[in-house]
Length: 339
Image (cartoon, rainbow, N blue to C red; front, side, top):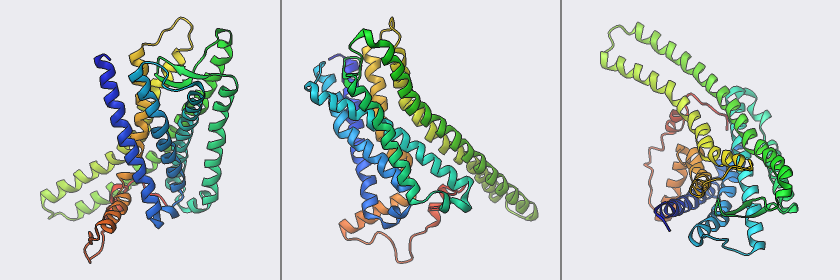
């Protein structure tokens, strides 16, 4: 193994460990917390965590062995099953992120009618659609024998063996990525930009009230006034930062691999082996980052994890005065959602 392969192996192992632990923590929070289970977005988060967890347990070790052995690690039957699952799980995870963005959009843009527009039944229907949608393409590729081991990506995935089928395979690949990656990206951009617009509007209203208050309080200390102005700036940046993370992590992790797969369709183009592995590892890194982007960094999940630690260690981590729930609303001040 050369240096690049060693570094990629270490990176993939780290991604595997982080993804395994973080997604298990998300599922543990839902099992432990009744409050989280009552929230409609929890259905999408559980589906996303399950997809990421299965991808971590089944597909990442397969790619890791492919890098170490520099050949197909399993027999044909297992390879086809692993490739089938990878196509299904990745597409399902993308659609789950799109569903979460739709939920956020409805909660922020239509807060008064959220409970009627986004019910548990509606969320279950959306998850059911994502499963049917995600199963369609791997079933077609399996039927047409387009799942095999690819040396470029060191994994069992969509792969063309017969040049005579290149035209059909090209059409299938373009439609598959358009119906999974591009569809999810369009939904993410549309919904989150709408959310950002509403968030900025609310922030502007808060800024106007703050400035009017500062004008009335003529004797206010300059340091206090400066802190108020700094808080205004942080509020404006907070919403933009969150939306950038949601959309940016999706693009950074998935776009290089999708673009590489599309370039691969051009007959005279050859994909570099190292770049193929790098792009594949980036898609896996999304499974490791999702729990932090959508769940574990939120104060509500931190509270649940602390309660779990409290139960295990049998220590009272919270004082009798109670937990300050205002911390939950502080982080999402400009992105109110109805749960």
